[in-house]
Length: 458
Image (cartoon, rainbow, N blue to C red; front, side, top):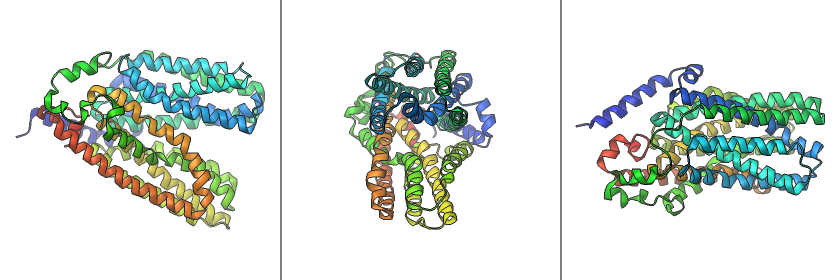
């Protein structure tokens, strides 16, 4: 006999199935989480538009306006990457003690201040600190947006994540287009206008977040109260008893294996362009097509892909598909002809489609498993640790590709693809075992009512 909680949960799943068929615009008008979610998505759109402006112009700004040489620029970007790694766990730790809404507003305002400071700072040492703090606040903001989604959207968090990614990609593409205008002008004043536009996006995002409400049942002391309110001895004996992610070996294993599951980002942004330039006769004009193709496919297909991965077990199973898509992409790169512009261009564009498919899968599986494998009473700190995987990949991925993979030639791509595919199988099996352990440890009541925790395994 089904429990009433299970009936309600299945009903929610059917509702999501019906929503999965709705168009992107219809979903954006009525996203999971209601008015607050819609406001947050608009804030993300403005934030990512500013981010797109900055991403397209920052290297040229530091080079031609600030006057940094290649060594200084490398140190600057390296410091930003390292600081970003700390941003996610720090935000997760603070979110266990302070309202997420307040922390997110603070992150936006901190970036507002540091980006404006770049207009007047000329000393490299000070600029190094400012860029590092900016990167830390950016990663913290992304983690807090993710935590907001888990609380506001509930069981429909996969749908919200798809809408978030579609919105973010559209914003970044729009921001890059704005940056192209400023870069075409090329004056110091034009660069300053672009920076101010980025800063204003943070101010507007903070104002919108201020209009949302802190989600009920979360805040300082919530984790301990919830843990004491009925988890029972069975849960205390299980994997979720350690409410510290740094002591949870199963979760740390997931985070460690999730790092190579994010390599699609570096393959798209670093591997494809450099391989085209250094190893093929394809015209350089093809390089912008990689990002354009990726952006369009993510905006159009993310909602569809997310609708097919609605449960933790489905997410764990889809990890293997990520490995296969990455292996296929790397195989195409290894087989890309060195001579013949048309053949090389078509092969590389096909590889861009495959790495985008991997990204579409990863964006759902990594996030769903990060939430589902975390104990609900300490979810913020757990998600903060999980967010480190993408930050570490952004720092180490380009070095891996340029220093090892591409240096080894076509064989390097084949080895990378096979390694990611093999690790995806390991991640799949480890995640399924962890989900089984969480379900076995959960009390009977929570197995049927906790739709976004371990109970979602059933």
